[in-house]
Length: 457
Ligand code: PMP
Image 1 (cartoon, rainbow, N blue to C red):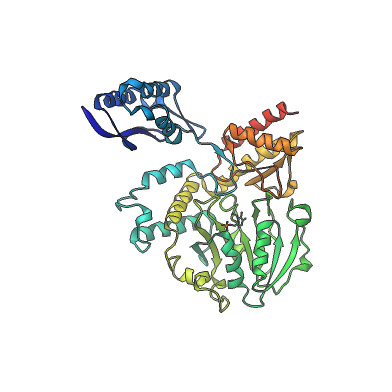
Image 2 (cartoon, helix red, strand yellow):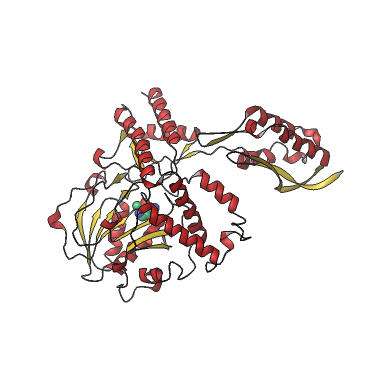
């Protein structure tokens, strides 16, 4: 019997494997052959198909070969000849047996595999709602539950006191560069900024459109390879706020000690370090972070703001850029980035399951030490940041020549270490090792760097 049946594919998870008959190409084939193929899948118990090791999926070689051989037998009539060995195999590579790479991207960056898999399971139907989170009204009870759970988990994870509001906004970190002065430069129309990289510079430039910006210190003179020394006599006691970038994504520096700003509200950009290390929220008036590094997909911006700073925005501030509007409406003034909030909530649960922020910090310190210890002992590689200010999240390094940098990036890519190219203003390489990067990923990178050094001495 010949029938019209869609192609099968394998779905695998950490501990199970399923054969699904629901995929893309509708093709004519012999139903008996299809059943034989199905039987072949069943003959291999899941554990033979699949090993889960070091966050990499791979299919047992013999099982994989048996299936591919079967599919590639041209005479079984399973697929029309023009797709045998090309089309189907490309699907194999594109979706079935593909290994995940080690992704060192600075952002958007890798996400915890467990969360991706959970989101995949819930993609079409969330809980008993019968619909995807993406299809849900933001005013529904189910979505409100998702939002409130995410807020509560973040409050718990970061020990955020009750007198701070948690807002889930849009517009990325860059919109905060304007919202902060519009809402906070409201008494004396001036603020202090420390310029530790491109993002701090952009924030200061944006703020200068709305009031007076006092650059307290900058490390631009040494291409931002450090957090600059601070001279407290340059701090303005009447500033409406004092602005810092806690982790500098491009240059790989971080503040390890906060400035002593007295009563002036401290404002911190934590876009590339939120949930990576413990932080004392009470030292801040406002903290913000775009989601696309440690929290989830791009599209949500988390703002944590002390309540007394709400409600004094400049008159001409657009409604959507007023913190108090979003605070009063519990981030539901307009349609929020619903799917991003859902996903971020799952990441919060994942961080909790890892042991919380303190456990993440320990893991991040161990991961970063692996790379920094190697850089310090290497005769070929060199870290670009002053030791005292090294980031736990972004590790820039260089080789002695541009040719070697290019060779390293190319060979690393061939070994599945991707997105290692440094920012154009620093050159060389940058390994971003956010919360979701497993220790094994950093160990594998360091092993590759050692091998590269031995081959290119
Ligand atoms: N601040 C920091 C520290 C960043 O790394 C970035 C880039 N992700 C931004 C702000 C700007 O964020 P966005 O692209 O979301 O506007």
